[in-house]
Amino acid sequence: MTRLTVAEIIANIEAGKTIEAVSADYAFTIKIDEYVPYACAAVHDGHQFRKELWEPCLHTQFERWYEEDPETKNMVISHPIVIAGCDSRFEYDLNRAPNHAIYFDAWGKQLWKNPLSEAMINKSIKKHNNFYKVVHALINQLESKFGFCTVYDMHSYNWKRWDREVPTWNLGTSNIDNARFGNTVETWRQSLSEIEFPNGIKSTSKINDTFQGNGYFLKYITQNFKNTLVLATEIAKVYCDENEQVIYPEVVNAVHKELAFRIPEHAQSTYNTFK
Image 1 (tube, helix red, strand yellow):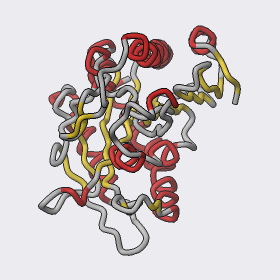
Image 2 (cartoon, helix red, strand yellow):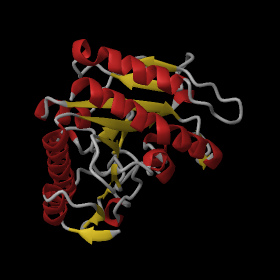
Image 3 (cartoon, one colour):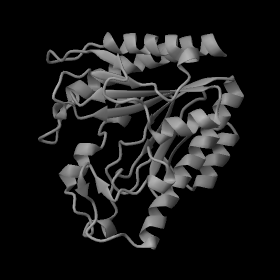
Image 4 (cartoon, one colour):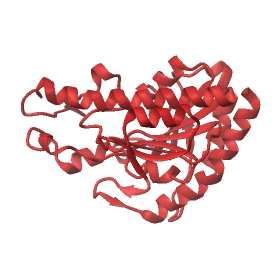
């Protein structure tokens, strides 16, 4: 892995070169082993929280971890194209529009002791903007090369906070063209429901049950690229103890192994349909 500026990353993408890089500000990573008509993303995987924000922040390290999506990058790390955030969503949320990316309160609790300075906010928003410059270049290259691509937008959610039974997997589709992609979504939902977990964990899969796919990452790509399907794919945090901050590596590994063949299989079928 090399450390590259955003301009260098974009230049490599536009030249069709393979790369494995971290952004110069250490805000995100991108890996392109080869150019294929699909990509994986884990925008909430990051937990970094720059030191100047520690003292002003009212949320504990655990409270931040609890709302992040740990291990979502590792679940898709073996795929040819992976882009992932390194910073905590509590610094800036890549799944929100730039003007709403900085939380003032989060999940019902005030986040900062006092309002952040304009300089501190601008530092975070610059990282957000740079990430989307790279996303734009990447999707533009994939659409130009292949005519169509699919993005697997990986997230996780805290299932224990719900007062009803919730699915292991949830697909959010309210902001995609369901008339065009409905069958493809159902095929992906069915594939996820067949995943086998260790430790007797059930694998159920539903559409728009817990979340509806309202994230900015999906909206940005969908609004700017007409031949890219973004599948907002959420796994319940059955791969950890969300209340004790304990990761279950055997469950993460099982998900990784299943997605290693299910994603390319689904992506190829989707590409054959829409290319």
